[in-house]
Length: 418
Image 1 (tube, one colour):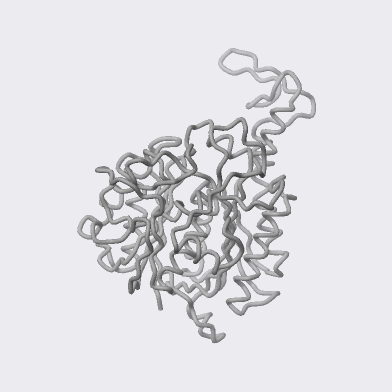
Image 2 (tube, one colour; image 1 turned 180 degrees about the horizontal axis):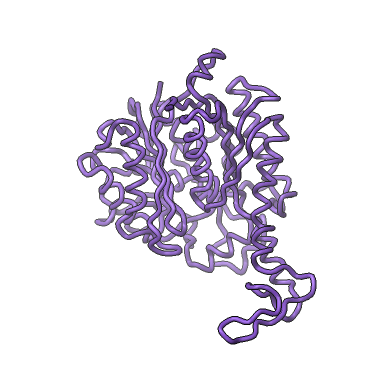
């Protein structure tokens, strides 16, 4: 049983503000949202810039962090309202967010002498005694279980807060988390297992992750993100929260709802090349894109009018992604416009997939391709049409959005305008 998947509602929030109009004035105009962040002390770091709203305060503190929870509810409520759906609705809730690794780190920093055993208390590994962990201290597996419980709790709070009845699932696979949530929802709807899904994702800039990316020398030091450009020097993080309502086209027709777009193809693939670097030829991304395109009845990609790239602006990612897109669509890659909206929103991590899904849909509905802001000199490694610096008006019917994550996870979602 295969059913068409329709998009009937969305809600979005970025560093530009709440709602789609500010998104249009920012992303689609090529205006970056980067600014010095006052959310925490950036003195110890190589850069102090992010696409972070100035008025969030301490935005993240486990599951009780009010800002992320409330932003998810607000975007979810907006999406349901646009779709014309109310409370007591049978709908799956699928959320892409980070595990609460901040709490894990706080435990490690504050742990008493003796540390935490990764294999249990008082164990012996390879003939060597492992120090006994402090009494009452969790082992590493226990800490990981605690961290993984936080996203599940957020999914529960989102569904319960919006009055939805149904399955709750949390995805924590880094920068493809919310895209993976959408892929899974499409599978459930297409196969007839559910009729409606609310897919959401969220990330708000906070010091823990900021510090990790800074330590990895991944952040742009001059406050500019230049995807696919020869002078690219790194990414910058950004606030992002979004939610979309997906339902079977049949279910939408029965209740008289008009779909905004259809998801006609999806794919997910891993390349397991490196813990942080992408496969140099973009192998997993190419497979995910090919899966989505084949599902849509277009194995060559001839019908694609636009690709919203992952495009982080880092040395390794952009060249690998370019080669991956060429491998996926060898006949048509040069003629398909490609852009990276991370050049304006920043990298939204777990929220990147769903926010960029909304942006890609708006590109189809508005007939405007968002540009790759900050683009300077061309790079021989990156030789596609990247819609540099200025928006482009087009009559687009189909668009692909792709995402990639540490560990070699890749997703692709292909949308079609009604």
